[in-house]
Each structure stands twice: as structure tokens, then as C-alpha cells.
Picture 1 (cartoon, rainbow, N blue to C red):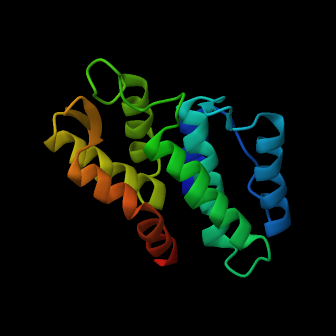
Picture 2: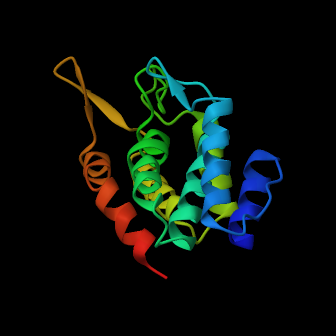
Length: 174
């Protein structure tokens, strides 16, 4: 794990982590986090937004540092389709937006800002920053009521549709 990622994890979660010396130890660390407390259950987030960011950063660090590890594909899938997707999209019972105002929840925004500040070069932070920039243009509104139905704003829908591809591209960059 890079020093930047360790610093980000400490800053975001307040917890210290040991820098693994090999992919097996890093993989075990990520699995231990999941086994202690699952990130999501029954359509809701079981951990905090900051802890979710921490797990995304831990998985991302493994992917970047251990490109040839046999567990890489599994962890990349968990990162892209699990942690990062939940962090940007929310969950059915853990929405990232307030149902009344249809705007980004303050606790989610605070977590996004902390992730960007503490791990600015990470793929997680770069995607989160892009998401916040789109939200700034919409007054932090994520969905709109149209004909009595909630629909995503076009720019947000596009970011979400491209999330996996963008994440995978960023993970390949040095």
C-alpha cells in the first residue's frame, strides 16, 4: 500500500493500517474488513460513508500495487461494482440524496470531500471529484421529478453509466 493510501485511510477512517508487504497480506486485510462488518446488507449501508471510502481506497491500492496478483480480478470487481458503485450511486435503503430536497446528503458530501482531500490522486477521489463538479452545476440535485416520477439528471446518468469504464481506465494509469 502506498504511503498516500495509508495516509488517506488514516485520515478518512481515523484508523491505522499496516502497509502490507505482499499481495496476500493486502488481500487478507481487505477480506478481514469485509468479514468484520459487511459493507451492505438488505439494500442498505451497514458501515459509514467514510468506511466505505476507506474500503474502496484499500481495494484500489491493492489493484494498483499488485497488478499480477491472482486475486486482482476479484478485488477489482469488488472495487468497481461494489465499493465505488455504492459510494457514487448509494443503495436502495441508503440513498445519497435527501428524498425531500432531492439534493446530496450532507454526510455523503462530507465523506466525498474528505476522500478528495486525503487521497486526491486516487481513482476513487478523481471520480468523486468529477461527480461533485457535476452536482455543483445542478445545485447538488441528483434527480428531478418529471411527470410524477423521479429521474436522474442527464449528466449524472451519464457519469453513472460510464462509472465502471472510467474507473478501469483510471486504475490503469500510472
